[in-house]
Image (cartoon, rainbow, N blue to C red):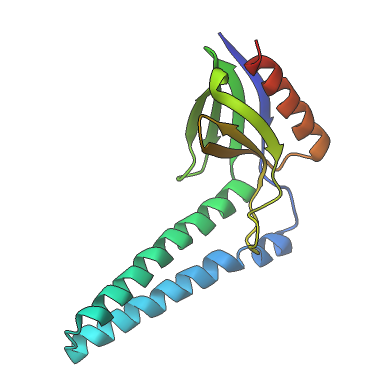
Length: 165
């Protein structure tokens, strides 16, 4: 038996605001292009210093990961549809148009508490999630994209009621 608790859609905003909010993925792709250019120049020069290679590859892979993280947040903010439901004693979160966070199933018995989340602490990157569930020993998961505070408060209360049964 599945009970749908909420269906969240993308953030509705004017086109110019979407363009301005597209700058982090643009700058991350520009940074990755510069790293690839630097890598090609080092290969052409024939530098075989192991420290240079490992440093460059480390920065490159970290930049790729950050680019995917920023791009996924952008897709989730403007293009995703998230379905939050209770199915077979588990909290199930399905998110379309996202490639890093597509499906999550959390046992209701393992949920410790749910808190409001207003973006990553100490970062200027916009994160569309409004709730964070703590479950298990040290696990947590962000969800409830683009929800208003009263709606997310009601959703958190309803999930906690199901988890206490």
